[in-house]
Length: 276
Image (cartoon, rainbow, N blue to C red; front, top):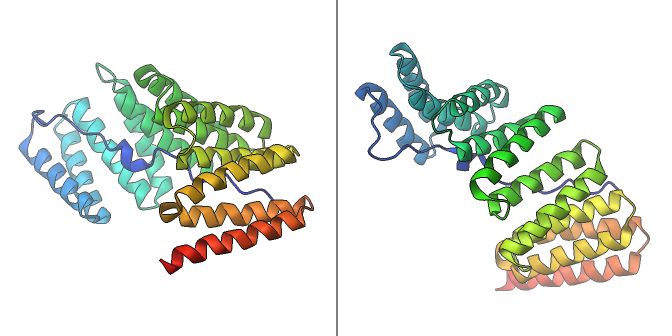
């Protein structure tokens, strides 16, 4: 049995949408109108149409040599839209340029830069370009820690993502260390009974199994499942997915009776939910 990959990464690309102050002026009404139309389409879920408007706004802004603030805003939106549309190869150079743009702002927008780097790292990880993913995750951690401090949900999420990268790249010892840091942060910020804590405990369960620390793996999965069961109405899908992997792990380490008991319990829990 192969342990489950860590659950999906945090800090989704939606969070990286930069937002200029309401009283900020673009310096060109036609560019601002195109951006406004793109924003309307994005909010309506019409991402392809939104992309057309944002790209037109960027082309016009470049032709008119508008400020770096405008260019960074538009490139951020375009990168996020391309990412959301699954056009990762197209999104990569736009993310890279948007990050450079934000680095040139005075003052630098470290929060948005960190979120953009997180998004780009997620793409590089999916593409198997682990060294580049690590580079951007570490830079994202540095940027967000400088703004938010270490004890913040966003920074904890980045540690969770970095641990997932080390796991995927085949470095379980490093993944374990980083996941443990993420867990400490999340426990401090969110408390024991939170689905994000369950996510990190599940990640640790996978890593412990990979390292043949079977008792610790069982404990991590069981604590994760306990949290998810306490939030079963909102977390039924996660509970079932983690539960199935827990059962598979128990089978792999010859804990068949325990696997059977939990499988029966899980079915009862999910069945009672369906009956409501």
